[in-house]
Amino acid sequence: MLDLDSSLSPSPVLPALIWAEGIKPPAPTITPPAFLEEILVQVEAGGEGFMPAELRTRVRKMLRYGRYHPSGRGKPASEFLLRAALNGSFPLVNGPVDINNALSLASSFPGSIFDADLSGTHLLLRRGKPGESYVFNPKGQTIDLEDLLLICQRTEEGWEPCGNPIKDSMTTKIRPKTKNAVAILYAPADEPSTSVKRWATRYAELLSTHCQAEVTGFKVVIP
Image (cartoon, rainbow, N blue to C red; front, top):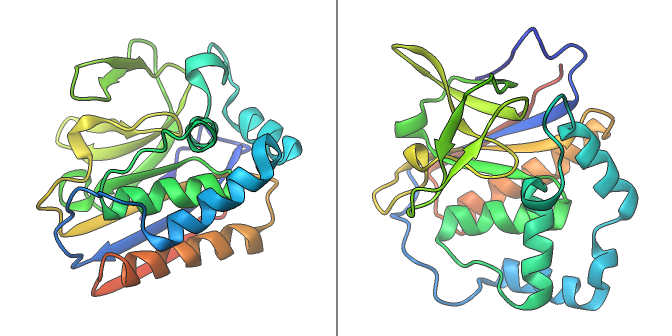
């Protein structure tokens, strides 16, 4: 389940929630899988134009709010992935994360993926509050979350941020013993729902075929 906080009215995002149960243990990726290699070839051929300027603008508009400006280090993850694909540094991580990165690059929609046994399966989308932050990499670097669109997990203390369209928290990332996963694609609110459904369908298909999930599903969360 993905709830949209009442403060997001009108909502700037049309999110897709994707899930998988019973995936094979995620192992480090050594070489790009075929589905990712195909996308990387297309990026090489298309260059910067692979990501339509109009869509890039709409995704940035989706994130722009208050103190948060989607530029520099605050660019959407999909833009970082495009730059990495063009300069030959596209990250290879593990099966579920590779799917998330590949679909984020292909669709131009930022994505998040979590170990569902760490994040839970009831999530909330809201904006970051003043003073909120979390660690996003093993080096202990943090990201300021104020005014940023966030995915939050339900805890005994309330809703705590665990992901966003820029960088996800270390606390709920995919790990070697992950069995269940839940993911989000963040599409602009004015994106046709048929487009979002198409990408979510492909995401779920890859979790089934590439990660050998026993059960997969998705839903587009209409605000």
